Image (cartoon, rainbow, N blue to C red; front, side, top):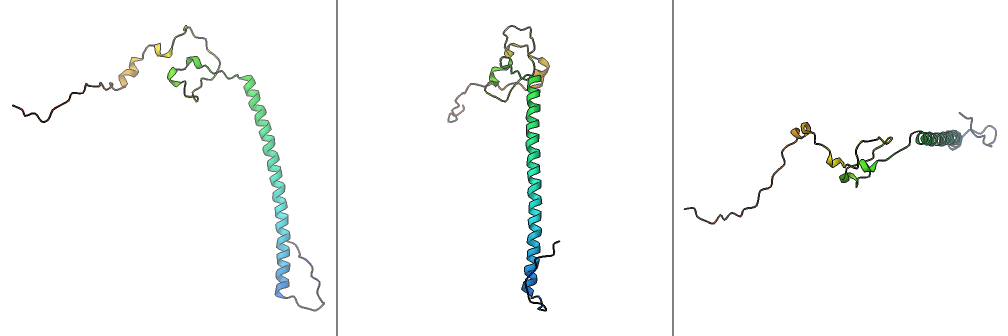
Length: 135
């Protein structure tokens, strides 16, 4: 804590309540200024640390991108998913023995198909006349 500001007053004159409050407020103001200066110093050091980390992080990302290239294999995607940009196949290109085959031409896995329900077969609409009297 600080001692406060010295007030110019006559010798032997007692301190009034206002003078005491003024001295206390001066002490608080000085302490708050010191705290604010400390906070600003810490904020500047934190911003500098964040800037250094940002530079380091981008450097590491560039190193990873040069070491591991990103290859998107669009021709292996199902044509129904080409409108969805979030579907990416990552990694090195694998050599396949197929010659321009579509994924839709693959053999079906019957074990998976057994787990699926049978599709609903539509029936033709037949108009029923409810007004006829049965004989």
